[in-house]
Image (tube, rainbow, N blue to C red; front, side, top):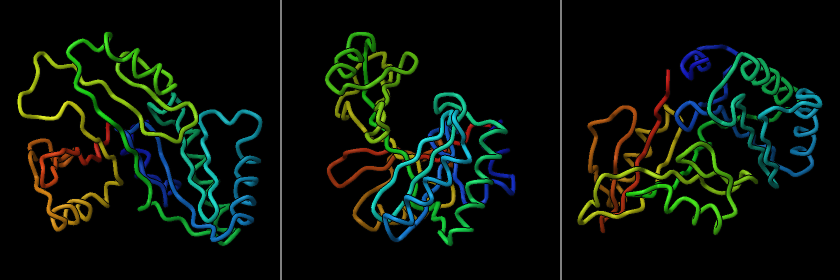
Length: 213
């Protein structure tokens, strides 16, 4: 199902779709490790023996959950149903969701010949390759890496930049904060899918919602 279809459902309340529609995520503010552990246990019982692409991170005072059916490259009705169930057990435990706090960080590397540089980064990072252009941390902790194919070098521009995927209802606040902190908008021709911003010295970030239909 598309990201927009997912978000339109009542079961998706409290969830946001990130990484180009790749997965749905939310964050629960548990306030303590013990409450977080209880929430994780409840989520595990809902998922059963086959957790699929359910990814749960337990921290001392928060639990972050990600759902996807296709290796973090798409959503399904099963994900939507499980999202609603997880939201229900969280409410029973009195744990509030804070979907505004979720995001996805990706490092983009310009490559004239991706096949020549991607293996180096796969080896040095210890990452797994997804498709022809992406590397993903198998532990789910580090940023993903994307290799952007270039026909020729771009003079006077960095070969690395950050892609930051944020919830669709948070992007305006992030842009305003970046501008107030001395940044500038470099390119907004792709808005509202993404904006390219830069800091005072020209280091760039693509701030994106990019929801694939």
